[in-house]
Image (cartoon, rainbow, N blue to C red; front, side, top):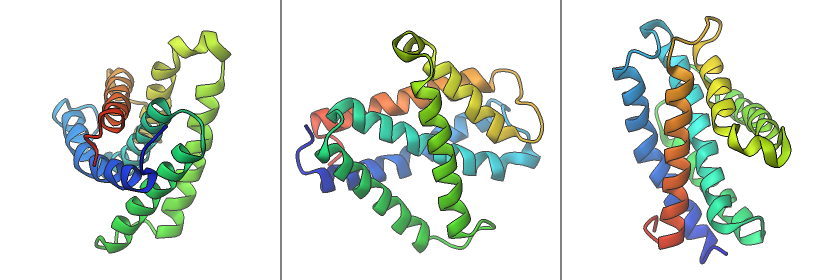
Length: 168
């Protein structure tokens, strides 16, 4: 169970805001996304890493009201940050719609295959995210694996931060 879900959710939102850009920079430095699609890749990465934080919260807190409250608080804090940031080429409503669409897709990937699919879920999530980051082109070699590994590291980091109170 998560102590003080609202505070944990806000702390994980701050963790996401500080960590997601640094992880994306690793992808850029590896030349895993073309310069022409970096803005799109960033928008997709932002959602993919936000989903990693959701996975981390669930991993640390289980499926319960406290975790749901922490996830809601995280999303609220993230959305507040986006509203305060300078305007982007994507409207707020379009961004929210894309998040909902990706969450539904990523959730379906996570559920596919049942217990036996758990061993490949990270790879399948990374492949889906890399397709979105690269569309309409095919992902560059290595992006699937890199996205998968960084997503898992972020999910694990979020879970540890919640478990040990480091995210507050």
